[in-house]
Length: 63
Image 1: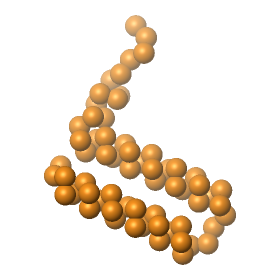
Image 2: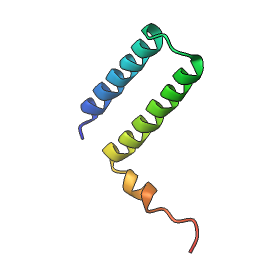
Image 3: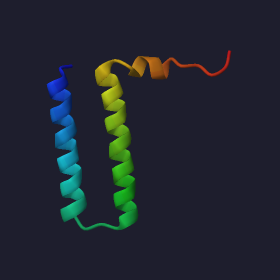
């Protein structure tokens, strides 16, 4: 995936999350859960986009 596409997607997700946090009224605990969920999803997507997700899922701690 080209670097420009990754940067544009990160900017779009950031702006969308900012707009949701700023203009949609909700409890702070729900905002925190939403923020954590979005960050985890974006991190997984970013790892998949750069091709590192296979290394994460195939990592083994024990024999």
